[in-house]
Image (cartoon, rainbow, N blue to C red; front, side, top):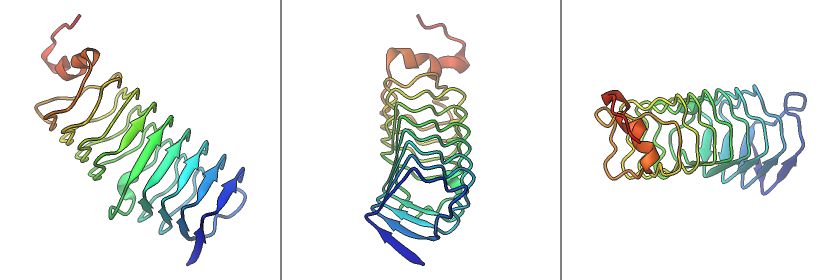
Amino acid sequence: MQLFQDQQFQNIDYTITVLPKGEYEACQFQNCNMSNLDLTGYIFIDCTFENSNLSLVKLHNTILRDIQFKGCKMIGLQFCDANEFGLSLQFETCILTNASFYKTKLKKTKFIDSKLNEVDFTEADLTASIFTHSDLSNAVFSFTNLEQADLRGATHYVIDPETNKVKKSKHNLTGLEGLLLKYAIDVD
């Protein structure tokens, strides 16, 4: 397996050019099109993806450690298929719709200014994660650990406190509606 360290990959359309299978360490991918790639078995450690399209990328047993996504389009990713050992991700200003984090352990993950519509967080461990200014429309929280999570500034979420762990989570007054929805309580 090839090793790529401290390299920058810019303006590359990987639907035309092949991304060599290997281990990428401290690399930056900027303005790249990686949509529909099969990244099965690839290794990414301490990498940054900026303004890139990663929609429908296959992540079977992909290693993702200390990865930052900034301004990326990431529709339909199944993070639950990635290698769970050391899985560590951060998202900023990303479109992350129809993604799945089913049963993933993502403590202290930052989801900043991102669109998380219809994302499945079922049985995920999001302890102490941050969702600042993120849109969680139709996101699924079921048996999710959100203890100490910061949802202040997040919008459009519905979280049932009876089926999710929410102890010491932080919310704005506007977020109370999403916590009380099942009780049909009107909050002004």
